[in-house]
Length: 322
Ligand code: AR6
Ligand code: MG
Image 1 (spheres, rainbow, N blue to C red):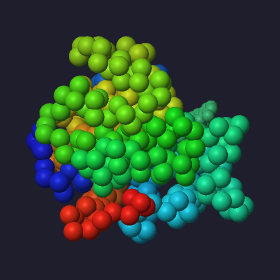
Image 2: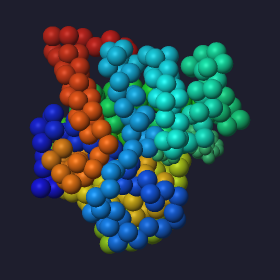
Image 3: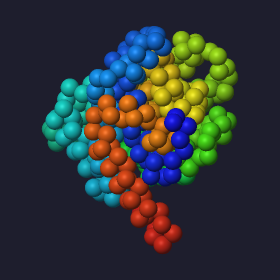
């Protein structure tokens, strides 16, 4: 059940369901330095609803904006994120985005608002990579194109170069995995995405991934890669969790949660990677039926696939908005 390798439609659905499942499974453990595997296991087998946080909400908003504008429109994407936040501000947002939304309401242009954060350097939080799976999907098989579009979507809230590179790395990995034959090897995946995040903070951790033995316990992995809210810690941690269990979405996501720290976001990104590689059949029925708005996630995945087919067809040419 857990080693499915669906066709393209199943992989699109798998990536979005994977984000939502990882987000909701990780959410109760967010901020704990360590998480016992037995606790994650119990929550994975429980029957309570799996509620989304900002990770899934912003993924939905990013996908809706790309579809509505037939590509990236910064003002529209910023307005979409701000509207979703205004409707449900209690979904667990980081500190930065609400400040950006307030600046937008005060009339600051979308491409200036994010640059004002954190002393003018912009954010390198993981808010841009956590929501970027739709970009990897529509650029499946094209990690470079995914990385470029991811950087543009990141700039709406994460102006810091490390925030943008984190989104580029995650999107490139999703793009590569959608078209990969399972199970992908660590070296091939790392080679395919390395160029998306040239900063030393990412390159050092991509190197470290290669040296992590399969038997290392979560706390040693977390000590090596980090498990924090910074994009350069949590994106490599998600790559690790996926690569630890490349044939099982459930095991990869549960392992991600045991890394501790920013558990919902590390698990959401792991879920995106595993879902892109393995497809929707890798998401257990028991999880899917607990997931908030699973139907909506699947419809959006289908719409992303239909849209990407229109401009990826050999008879059409892509505009620079994509
Ligand atoms: N300098 C210092 N600290 C920083 C910087 C910087 N340039 N950039 C980010 N931080 P934020 P997000 C720290 O606020 O990325 C939710 O729980 C700082 O502590 O831009 O959208 C989601 O589930 C800042 O508050 O928000 C994710 O886990 C933090 O990084 C997460 O929040 C997050 O950056 C997404 O947060
Ligand atoms: Mg969250």
